[in-house]
Image (cartoon, rainbow, N blue to C red; front, side, top):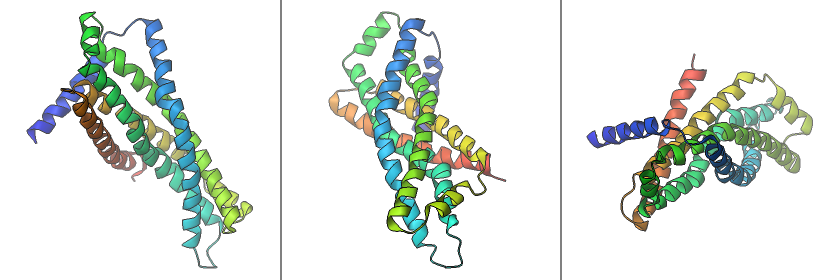
Length: 248
């Protein structure tokens, strides 16, 4: 238990160093745009693919569980919309990104550590944590909400396509359900969660990669630990944020 508190303290000390002594503005902006491409744009494909088909699965499962003829069919669209906005897109997509992006961050920084590239940066007087981690944080926090909006949109489209192909729900019923009693704050709630999860996805893998010791095997183990702990923290924060933002 004491070791966990030590790791948590080390993590927050790392964050303090991340936000100190920024680099030259030109170098900093170049790093941010590079991270947006590596961590964000390159993830849109898998997010779009998963969101589209999961939206279809949600509609099919919802329709099959609403077999009572007295139940209005527009509830299928309503339930699908709420599932995608409140939970699937912000939370499950973030966990998927934790696996894809988190392992990349941990392995890339870990490789720089074991090959002494980080030591070279520090010898030159560069704040290595600020140089390596802060652009990842900014890229994730500001770009991932855009990715989640795409996920929600494609999930709803996927549900509409599945409903029409299977004949389980008509277009008019589905559209009415998607529009029924829409609460704009749910979008805000989704984006707030996404921004918090994006910060976690950028920082926890960076922590595991930056402090790795050893060689290639240890880098691989650090990447695995980074994905596991990032997913755990996302799930815990999901509970806390849901209680704070939606709890009565």
